[in-house]
Image (cartoon, rainbow, N blue to C red; front, side):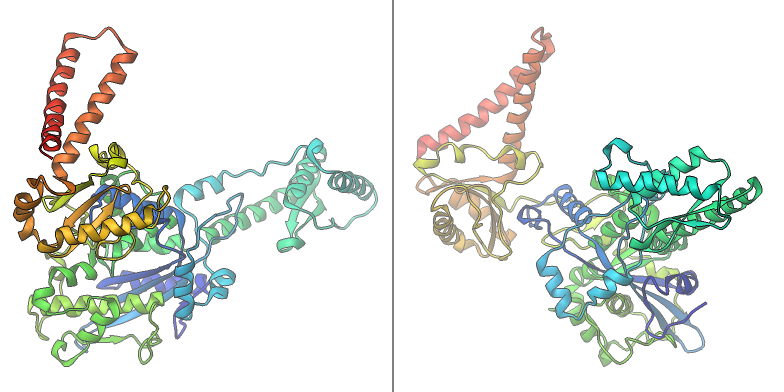
Length: 587
């Protein structure tokens, strides 16, 4: 057992600290976590937007988890001290880095803004790369257990490698009849070592070949052995292979400890940390959000997101600022005395000094804020002895979704978007007649978004990306027109679908009926304004008709029910088209 004052955990002390981590998790009341990443958004089309469906948002999060790395993981376990009537925290800060192992060589993306942000907060990149703890998912572990190096074919060796190989065999042939001690061969590349081991093992029964040395200095060492000696050396080698595999599994053991403990997991803006942790350390993320929820609850059955709690209880808390450090600063005042929270002796790195955006520090802040929030919201006083009823509340298993009006619910029914305040807007421009007659099918059907997207401005912000000349100026001009058009109805957010059409969301739902009255039925407007639900239904119906036509083309011997279905869909689509035509005629 090893106790380090700062509990900064790297590859160097991971094995020694692991028992402390297990003990802290098993004896905890709950556990707070946090993570830092090499990046967050994999391109413009994967930015969060208010109009994302839950499935669309999950696919963006999944793409992020598949692209970027968690490079630092914070874990803070909170324990109730009955004698002192307070919570005490044991905090660990892990550096994470994937190591090449038995054919695995992880590739990942970095986002410049994320690395710059980490650098500004004194992130130690040398420690991340040189001393980061490795990891294997369960699937990768299985692959590595069954990994057998495949030696290259001799005919594919370049001349210098082939000469090295032939010289090595000659040297062994000379040595086996003369010398008694082991033969240490010159260092060479991994593929060449595999070829040498394979060739010598097949040629001689009384040899044992070990790989010794580190990194570029690795080489083959050849021993003459009896059958008993060979068996003994193979057993030693197998033990070393198992130790190497266990070392490679690395940080996944911590995730498995969290899983086995079934303790509540607390975090701030937790969804990305959970999704990335699952994908990076445990198993690949499932295809759909429903599958992900089931899989995640098997590993983390109880989670609380303090960002969601703070947002959901804004009126009760009278907080205007909900960033983690802002919440912490507001909740450590005299107004929020209970419960008392301290650092466990020997785990006091964060007692007197702040380390913002260090994963361990943010994990401690998350646990601190959670306790203060729940005690305040539930009206708990200092006399109460904490029990698991603390976790039986409406915020359980609901995760904050950035740029969304609804949480990501792990348990029960997923709350759905009420899109009655969203409108599809076409700019009636003679140069783009074809563009404003229909919604882009991929958006209507929930596939990948179009290339054109909004930037991060919370107000109306036409995207700079476009495929036409001068269309940026056109978007800016039309963006101003849209702002003017919707000005009587308050703040809006827009998502451009092309350079002539957009989705517009009213932030004040009380204005929806006024938009219906003043814009949809206004024949003098330069815009065609259609309720989003109606437009999406029309686009889906058209897609169904197209799919039916393609099926009919492949199977021309149609039955009566297929004809009837086609006729029915035709009527529905026809009526929708007539609705649009009537609007156009009135213009």
